[in-house]
Length: 283
Image 1 (tube, one colour):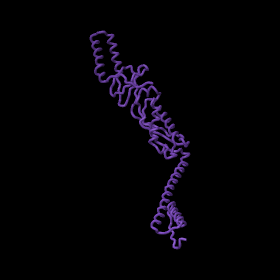
Image 2: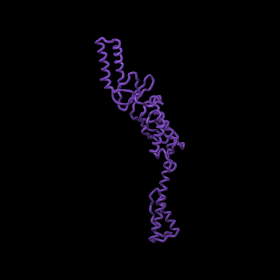
Image 3: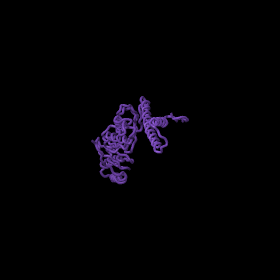
Image 4: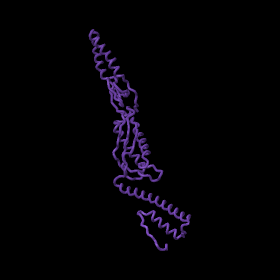
């Protein structure tokens, strides 16, 4: 495995104002005084070659340098730099980037087809691994991110089956952390660091979306009805206790049953009840 190391380079301004002027002055002196004309020609060729050693490094950029196929280092220091002219230099961006996957269809761990997509925030931290360990690190990021997303989505249910279950819809932060770790495990060998990974789209597939919506509505209705019944029973119990405590009226078991039935109808009904005034006997 190739790991990143510091490459050789000099400050470009020092090279421009010190090294090259010395070479040029030496060449000019020998040419004027006709001293060693052959070495002077060689010196002039070397001076021209040295101009090819200048290069610029922008902020959040790295220059991966190779010599005849061998990796010799990476330069990340910004500004004008000078290195050996025979070094081949490849620019690698170290800036933070976003990758948004397309909507993919996958089955959750309950077998329900769902649509899911993600946004991955990443950057290159090891330029040598990014350049030499994979063929195209940008394509590698996109393919491996979608593969990790598909594997993660098939490990969890869309909706929780129990209160303690972790699901795609009910625990977004936990799911994001799991997805980030899974993507990082795959991209670490390519010198890439994942800063964040979040679900950007989550829905049932169109063929089952209507049925799942009905199931969710039924679950919501059952939960609401349960709360209503619990509250109604409590209110009926409180009403009977108050009547008995204040001795407003003596009720036998039959009258209590009738009163409980009427109160439950009033409290649990979907529509507002219409009052009926009974002017005769309760019997």
